[in-house]
Length: 185
Image (cartoon, rainbow, N blue to C red; front, side, top):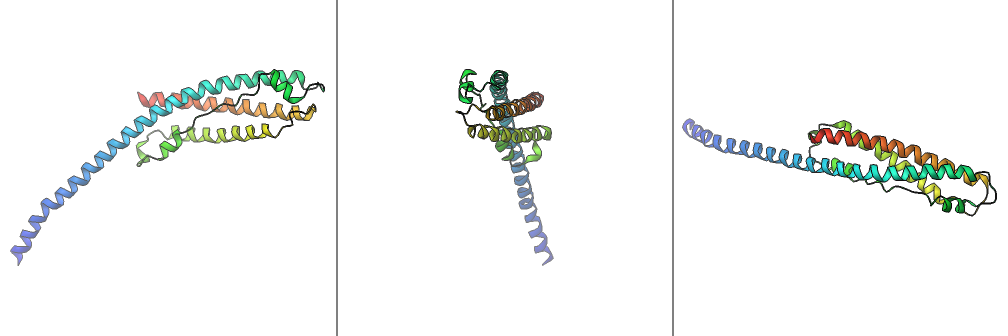
């Protein structure tokens, strides 16, 4: 009986070792897959950030000029709000791409992302982007036919918010860009 138990034990050792080796190699493969995904995501973040900086820079500058033009017409009760917007070549709302948070959160092993500062900066940016989106919605509630100073002041406030939040997003995008470049090294 003891001999039989000994034989069973000796026969189980290779099976147990085989299972441990299989688990170990699977773990290595998952780590490699996660690193490949992370590298691809970092590349996407870099590309997305570059596009967003360009888009947002142009949009913020245009809105700054529109705000300056609006000041000229703020007290003019002859010109309706819509005409002022037309004279300033419209308002520019940036199209900000923000796919990467979803991609980053989708990694199976988040501990592989060594740079939590990158993730937190991207999250901060998402909050600022939501504020910009809400201010854009406020624009649609303006009375464009009105010649009233209060409607023009509302637009002035909205433009100020778009410029301030745009600058904040640009600052975060520059930080993200810098972090991504450091990760790529």
